[in-house]
Amino acid sequence: MDSAWALEVMHNAPYITVSFIRPDGTAYGVPLSLASTDDNTWYFHCALKGDKLDAIAAHPEVCLSAVSYCQPTVGPKDGSFTLQYKSAIAFGKATEVTDDKEKITALRAICERFLPQHIDAFDESVARSLQRTAIVKIQLSEPPTGKRKEYDSNGDEMKRYRKD
Image 1: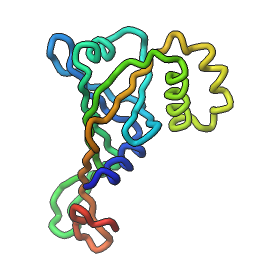
Image 2 (image 1 turned 135 degrees about the vertical axis):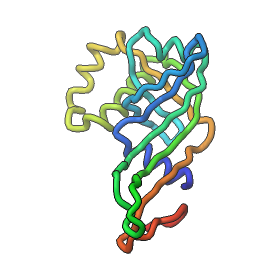
Image 3 (image 1 turned 180 degrees about the vertical axis):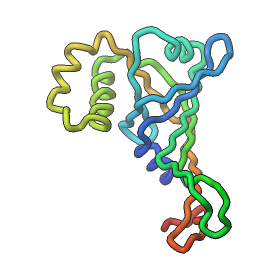
Image 4 (image 1 turned 120 degrees about the vertical axis):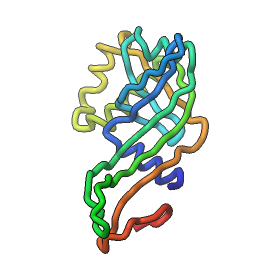
């Protein structure tokens, strides 16, 4: 699927798994609550020290994997056991944000995405926690791509660029 479709998956996914390479070269993937300020800039928050920041310092290249729909099903025409899904993958470069203004912008985007009903408490919360919260920015290095498997109401698999 095209990048616009993949971005929709990323925006709708309940979390996005970010895969890192640790300083010793081993893989490390973790589901995180990412939010974006534009289609190329994604943020997450974490502790001031830990595996994610160590990995980024050694190897800033990351891979993002998102799933916004996943439903085990039986193929409507052939009875096969299968999975309907919508997924996206993207690659980017991660950096720790040090500017307080950008950190607040990132935290606001995260709050607006995951807790919009509590935005009225945002300023007070940021005042309490900004200095003990790390923010990581991921700049996508190329447009994301997506894949899906879905059936229409007639039981036909919707192929690659079919929009209905």
